[in-house]
Image (tube, rainbow, N blue to C red; front, side, top):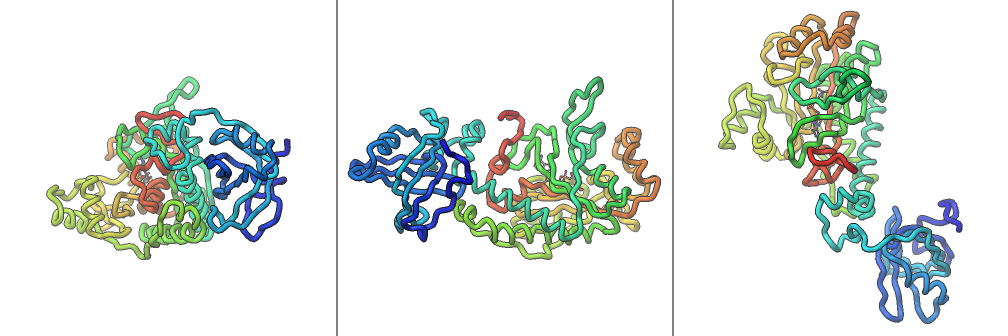
Length: 435
Ligand code: AMO
């Protein structure tokens, strides 16, 4: 049986009226209306209507069609007939139907969108959930988002690196680690490429980026936290925090623009019209952010408090678009952020926010070895564990800055998706490690 992609057409248009084509895909729907039978065939391009006129059709073809179960994989050879009422503006009158692989019934979930499935059912059967046009649209957009990120950073002179995910030390003091057995010693899953991307500044790579997994062992069960997330990280030498903030806001705008341009069918499937943010984003100092919160919320924040989820919402509602929060208290930001020389209680760190949540954190980094050593100690961490990192600061490392941007959060806020699990193929959370 011939099934190779090169032997069939995947993109049929009404202009091909009269031509004989071959289409392969899944049986999305079967409708038997007496004198006429419709099969809806689904492939990654969309839907095609196969119309069987029972009076004129070859009885063998009709027999095969009648025996089909939904979600079976078939190859259909047929004549294209322009038909304004059919999806895509054409129907296919079959000459031959080959069953490539039958699907068992009943299905673990519906793929037509007619029956709502719980998120857990969809995630348990992700292979089938991805057959739903809406789910597939999300992951097509994710592809376009990441490809635009790569394109933008490459245009800005960044090169892509890959750093280890099995590591010996914590990066983000405070956030929990997943320990693993590594031969006869203990290791951890990396929380961030932070230390490694900084090492590359000492290595003279100047502008690097990585798109990779980060692991956080926190037991939160929220709609915006995963235990394995994807982080878009950059690090750049001879740049300060303000320089990398400009790169970040321009990247966000670029990604929105490219997704709007290139993912038209997927956005249509989701019923979304993207509003492209405009750069520069508003900049609020931490002090101003606290003030906005205190004037608009029942929850009073003192200088030095981290912003609660509620405070993020209150401030986000007040601002109403993407914005930055800059100039954070040094003590609530990681050891690697660079305090202001003339005001060391405040650090050159920033968060980039969507009105719904934080999307990114970044900073100018400490590049002075002794200061870094002291900052590690001051945060209650043991500098011995950081020797491989500190070493790179003794032999000439330029001033540098960078940020980490959560890919899932960027996508979920772009598409106004409620739950972060909906934008990851196989989410990892407190209750889920499979599939
Ligand atoms: P931070 O810990 O703020 O900073 O992480 C950066 C961004 O990554 C995303 N993120 C998450 N997304 C989903 N689930 C999680 N559990 C999760 N944790 C983080 C968020 C967040 O803003 N090393 C610094 C970055 C830097 O300074 O370069 C860091 O990791 O969108």
